[in-house]
Length: 135
Image (cartoon, rainbow, N blue to C red; front, side, top):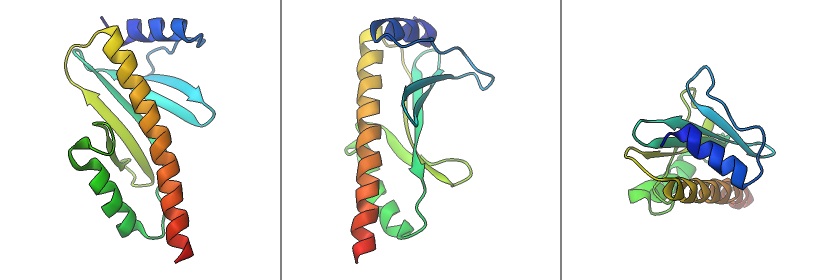
């Protein structure tokens, strides 16, 4: 099955309307909440998810990057996703690639886990910044 058919099923199941369509960059944009969009790409086979976490902080950058590298280590702190920078190095991103054929159940579980990690890391990075600004 394709990412588009998975999205149609997912949107129907969760009453999300309209169902995202393929855009000019050959990806689907799934709005989840205010200021939260998940980008999906059909890898044929597989799927790729990515989203912006937040703007890259300017203070304590090196300490934050070290902290995030530990989270990325073997995907332990990110559920197999990766925290990185966008191509302009302005935003922190979270991405997950599943380069093999999956069924709808695996698609849904991976998407839900991806969103959970996205929300967790948004809060965790904001808390990291607050802790560092105190010192």
